[in-house]
Length: 313
Image (tube, rainbow, N blue to C red; front, side, top):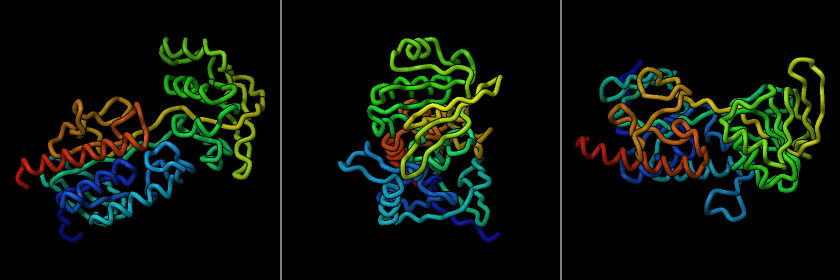
């Protein structure tokens, strides 16, 4: 392998957090290098209409928004490499990152690797993603006003999604594979007392039916013990069984919660390693919105610039 390529700032991830960090660091003349895997753009690339990102009164397609962000980052001089980081040595500066093809070094690192929603792997789930299947009620709930909506899950996240969706849907089914919610007491009470939510106990999602033309039309459920099948008419299926932060590369090095989300200092994007900053969904399990990810990307870039200045590097 050739000599490592040295950069002042490297950004990992090309979602709203990573690309916003790239725009800000590039405009600060830090000449950032952004590395992302084979699927750029983060979770927004699996979203069709984005109606809640400021500045687009008519909405914008998720992939288009991410392409615009990438063009903006490149305009200010961000270098983008498509590769996968397989090893990160953060024990000393400059930090060393190894990919499948190259080796890079940097004075500061911004981790914006995001999180991946968990899926059930049932037929129709991935095929209709963005066409009635969703993993984000805040993002997509408004598309299903006065429609029947189904939420799959039984934890706090599922309860939050179901409660939020009652603002839009005429009825919300909540499908849980057990006979009792595993959510916190307050979330359980909120769901069970809501007249617009109907619980479907001891059932699991087996299939989502519909088409990209017509959207979701129904969900096929199967009983957890007997295997008996039941089909319900619904216009949307929200999978709410959690997310997996893309933080595996930093296990044992960066502080993280048991769930894998990176821990940052209060009101900051600083991690426990000096010179390493984390932004976006890899450190946010509460909001998980494009706009909040972009906001923390801005924070990480500004903190990185100030930290480098303090290091005289």
